[in-house]
View (tube, helix red, strand yellow):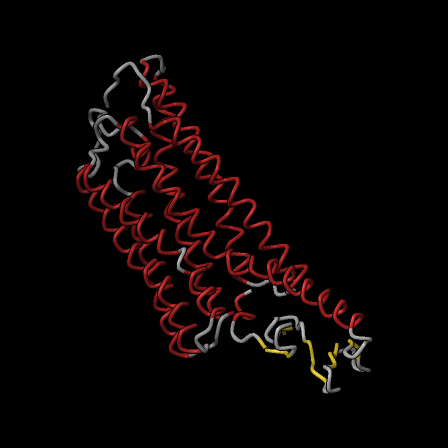
Length: 345
């Protein structure tokens, strides 16, 4: 490890990025839970897994910020041996936490897919992806723990004399392999929902909007690929405090954006409520201006009905699963049922 007497310029960026990531993840997950509890009343396994992932992400980013402060003291040459030991211990724990954080983010996305459509082929692919994620995570996690003999030496600096650990290059190869598998899995998680929507929905503006929402996951795939390149190019056994921030930024971006991708579909319900409320207001206003030629009544079974100009009745359903949310198109003054998008919230 080198000490150049000046702090790494990437350090401040790493702290700032982590702060923003924690803030955005908190907002997106809070809105997701609000939607699932108060609006769609469809809290599920994917929300629980996303909650675990969110907590791990906060821990991971918090440890990254703490490690940066420790690393800065080391770079300035003012760190005690205790601080140096704390820095490398923090890096080890961060790596172990990262393995499970990114895995649970991916599990949460897989658990979300049945909300879109229940299909046997999709289920098989999802279970296969889940098994690959579990095997990848367990393999990397156990490999990292047993890299040194005794195990406690994994928390020490790789330049410590007398360590009986695997060669740092082999360690980096393991991390590269973990990253490559992760990029492939992220690509599958990106393609699956888009494929499901394309094969089960009619082409429409709404369909394109939904696909664009899921396409945000493309950034996670690109970031994962960048992270793999960084791991393969940098030697983290030397100048550790200078190289780690570059990797840390991309690592945390990958994990947080993965969580956001799982939250974005649920956030559509908030926008839908705004549009639906606006449409209802327009309907009432139009009815008043036209001498109540069209109105809105509630049937005996509690289902809301909308009556058009010619007296035909139409049902406006806002079911628990939101599988049949109805919109009023004021240009045509008729009801059109939105297909497919209801199940993604």
